[in-house]
Image 1 (cartoon, rainbow, N blue to C red):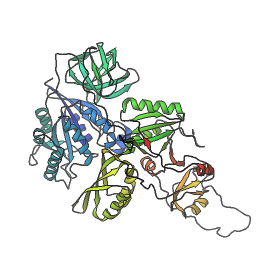
Image 2: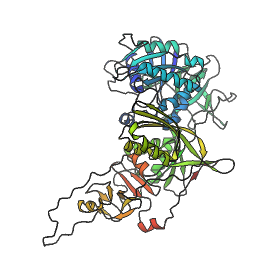
Image 3: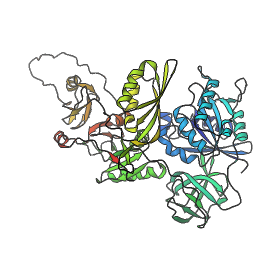
Length: 609
C-alpha cells in the first residue's frame, strides 16, 4: 500500500492535460519505443479526438521506480460534472494543470472545488511554459488566489509547484532549472501525494465510483478498495443506495497497466480496480464481503437541469440513411447509455415513440446524439428545456448558472445588452488590457443559444464557461430566437431558380439539388414570423424566347449548422432530424394547417418533488 499513489488530473478544456498524461505514460516506460506513437492516447473516443475535450473519465496506471501510480483523467467541461464528483472518492491527490498563458479558468474552479472538499492533496503543474506569451509567475499568483477563494486549508495552500511543457516532455521545479525529462514531476507525485487512505487486514469494502459495461461479463464497477482484499470467486454483497442488499460473487477483477485493463486474481487495499458480478450496481454504492457490514456513505449525484425529447424519425425521408430507426432500437440505445453515464436519465412518455432524456447540459446530450448518428441511428431531437422544481409554497424554481465571460473591450456593449435580454445579473466586471472578464448569474434557459450569439458578437474571440449555482425563483419570460423560419410547402428536389427567389426573404440553409419535404425548414426568415415557401419550384419553359433567359443565378452560401448549434437554434415547435448522413431542421407538425391549429404556449417542465 505504501507504494501505491492515486491521483486525478484536473484542467480546463485545452490546457494540455491529456498530452501531459501521454508524456507521463511514455517516459515511465509503460510503452515500448514502437508502441503508441499517436498523440493524446487518453482521448480514446473519436469525438474526444475531434473536439479536443475529455468526455468520459478514464483510468490509466504506470510504474515508476517501484511505485504503482494510478491516474484518473477528469473531464474539464461542466456538462460532464457527473463524471467528476465520483472520481474524488478514488483519489488521494490531484495534479492541477494550468495553462502558463491563460491561467486558471472557470471549469478548473468547478473540479478543483470538488477535489479540495474531498481533502485531496494538490500539486500545481503550470503547463505550456514554452508558449510565447507565457507568464508562469503571474499565473501562480492567480492559482493561489483561486485556492483562497475556494476556502482551501492551510495545508492545501502550501502546494508544491512544477513548471512543465508536456509537448516538449520536460518539467522543472524552478524556471531557471535545466532538465530534459519529467523526473521532477514524477518525484513530486511520489513525495507529496500520500499513500491511499485504506486499511489492509480487515473486511473487504469498496465504494463504486465509475461504471463500464462488458458484453461478456456485464457491468464492471470501478473504485478504490478502502479495506481488505478481493479475489476472483469470493462471495460478495452489494449494498444499494436504498439499503437493499444483493448477494453474488466476484467473477473477475481488473487492474490497469498503461491504458489496458488486465484481469488479475486478487487485489489489495488502496488499489483502484474493477470488479464484475453485480448487474444492478450503481455509482456511490458499497461492495463488501458479508451482509452484516455497514455501507459506506452514499453520495448522490447532482440532478440533471436540462431535458430534451428524443423521438422516432417519422419524416418522409426516414430510414434512407440509418439502419436503427424504430422506437425499440432508440430506447435500448438510451438505456444502454444510462448504464455507464449516470448523469443521464431516460423516461418514457405518454407517446410510445417519444422519450424524455435529461442531463447536465446541451453539450452532453449533443454528444450522445452525435454518437448515435455514427452508430447508424436516426432520431428527432427537440430544443433543450430546463427542468423546474417547486418550493414548499408551490412556486416554480428554475436552475440558475454562474456565467464567466472573457470578451474583447469593443464587444462589451452588445454582449451586456444580450445578457440583459436573457435576464442575467452582472456580479463582477474586471478590465485587463483589451480584455474584459465578466461574472454573471443567469437562468439556465438564458444560456441556451447564447454561445452562438457570443461567437457572432465577438467575432469568435469571446470565451465562456458556466457552473451550476442554485435553484432560484422563476425569472419570467425570456424571448427566444428573433427570426422566424422559411418552411417548405412542397416535397421534391430544391432548385436554384426557386432558392434565388426565396433568398430575398432571408438566409438559406440548403443547397440546390437537396431532397426537401413539406414542413422542413429551408432557411431563416429576416422577420419574426414563419413563411411558407416552395424551394422545389421549377422555371416555366416555353418554346418562345422568354425574358431573363440568359440571367445568371447567384446564390449566397447557405447557413450550415453543427449539431450543437442546431439544437440551440431550433424553436420549441421544431425538431432536429439527425441521421448518419444528414442534419435537417423541421417543424414538429409537418402540415401547415395542423401547425396553425396547435396552441402556441410556453410549457414548463416541473420535476416531481
